[in-house]
Length: 346
Ligand code: SF4
Figure 1 (cartoon, rainbow, N blue to C red):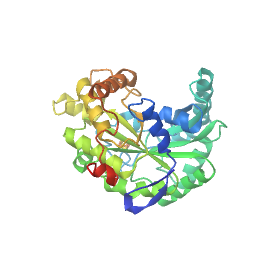
Figure 2: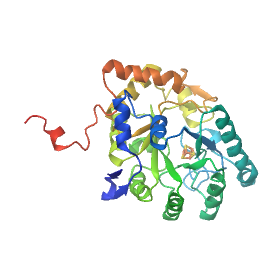
Figure 3: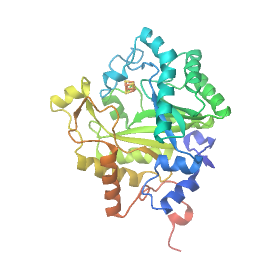
């Protein structure tokens, strides 16, 4: 299916089939669940296996800053060059092979996307990136890559290389840690980029046939509920293909943990988060696939909030909130309406 990206007026060949999403709503889905979409569009159970390929981040290694984002835990800071070499060869292959064999044996997945989850996974020289990506795609049941990175770390050479993988038949996603569509929040959290970097790159990514997942964190410092809703609206307008929504977690040994202990930051309560996600989904385009609705991975060293953020506990509560309201994803989305929808009274 073809859709137009509003960014720079670029027409992009997009791979998301909106008819499938529409059918999901007709079958009673309250939001566009990524796993179900994949089953219907690809005809098999797809499972994402995380890989740690030893990437660092320009927000840690002093190119942009040596502080990192204020919520970024130490396990995201990554390795020395030496340990990186170890991760790169046999152990990286082992990570993938073992996970795939395990998930095939439990029936969790038939085909696999390798998810480069730690650090900034496009932040290397192009020949090193190619070696890592090629190795990750070796397993015959791997259908593609999902590459976690920053919107300011996708130069043209990297995009061209990703396009080559798409042309070879692989499904390639980039997962951009945007977190908020408000510049003051990007500054407060030391992201070292704003919104313009995302606007600059998203059309270029789509032009290469690469799909875009965005991350959004709700409950960031100094952000109001109406600003979080505006983030949902902007995500819809820029044409993100999918989204991961998380509550802000206060992790041990982060600057945010210091603010929390000093009483300068208060996390969202469970009730606030559930209500906020329901509002957020109502304002989000019904076409944006939802990959995650809360946070359950890597929460072992969490200081706050005190409530269990696992998606299996929080997800049903969000669905219940929407059911009680009689709404669903996109109920209050008003961007790109047809003339008829705009002028319902004849
Ligand atoms: S961009 Fe990602 S890896 Fe880098 S400091 Fe921020 S959260 Fe950590």
